[in-house]
Length: 355
Image (cartoon, rainbow, N blue to C red; front, side, top):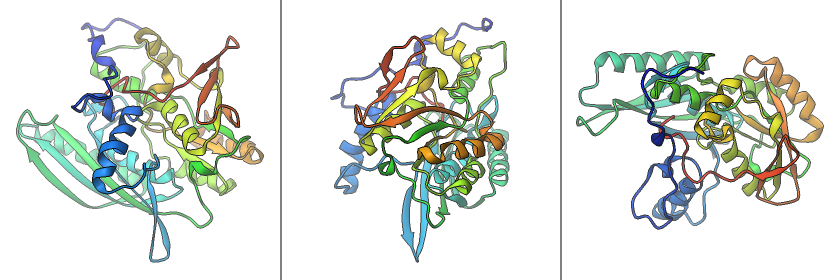
């Protein structure tokens, strides 16, 4: 790792946890951790008429006309708009495609909303639009409707993108955390933390000895390869905001089971490990955009792992842990030195504005 040409502002890389009774929204409310869950459960859902806390799932599965549909929506506010390995346009398509894939569905149609800031270059809007189109073609999905709004200069960040998607869930597929039971095996499809470090490197003008590019990619093909082995997968998640730690904690809480992770088994590439060590970050909390974590019955784990490794997006897939009956709702990691540490749900956000 080499020095940057300009000194980075390290204070901007963490989002301190605010007091729970703070009367205003803080960046941590958008981090996908405990503060996000509290905002939804205590403010948003009651306002919408929700009687109970919502399940923290990547997409909703609803029935319509006899079909089971997966439906998801997401908004992307990444800064900068273009970063090594991708752009806000790639994130907008792949993020929604992947949310649907975590329910077992291949996205069929997307909507796309653009919020443009007055003064942004038309050439930038064109590049973002081209990236959306290219990503949609790669994922095999059609953008069929959308909207465009413009806000005054100083009231945006160039371009924000909001996408929604819909797809059909195949018969026999039932992916939800409530199906997780002790003895299940935890798999991850590849190296973690790459997207967050790639965005940070561009934003803060950091340079690494090895190039770090975002892992942003559509996971629908990988999921189909896994389901071809057995439709009896328990649950899938793409660990975006809050990273792997947030996804594992959400599943542990929803299933009422404990999760044990072998820390040395979690694939962390050297540049990510080096960047996190320098900045005091934990790779398990750094966002990903082209990885998934899977909870699989033990009897199917070897075959599913082989199918993942046979797919180019799962070539570095690994077994990282298991589900246990002990410490329900809690994730613990066995360290390389033989100790144990609790992997909590993140409070706020280590690296804001990365998706």
